[in-house]
Length: 99
Image 1 (cartoon, one colour):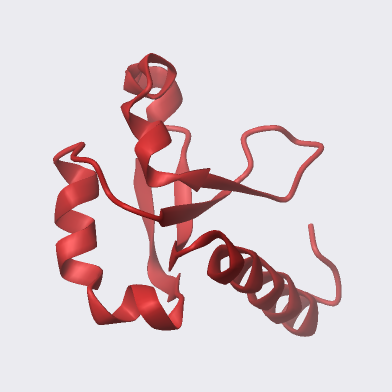
Image 2 (cartoon, helix red, strand yellow; image 1 turned 90 degrees about the horizontal axis):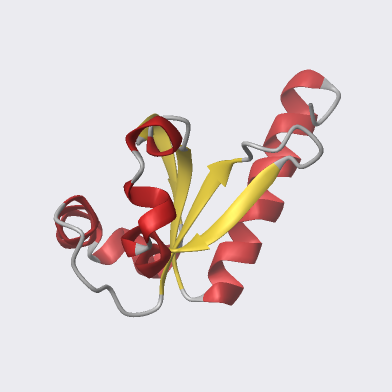
């Protein structure tokens, strides 16, 4: 799993970001934490995953896990969706498109 250098963080996620990073790296259970990643499916732009989904066997597969590129981290689904909106707005304002 690759992490974007200038990671987008929700307000609540920013407060405990180092603890959250450690829990995700160690595959520990994290309450109400969501990851925003570039979609592996070319028909989508971004994917929102619960951090706990990374414990599923599908994500343990190294070839798939290496394709996941995390661009945002949020506490709570609402904050994750707000983060998606922010990422799309920033991308559109910088490039004139969302692809």
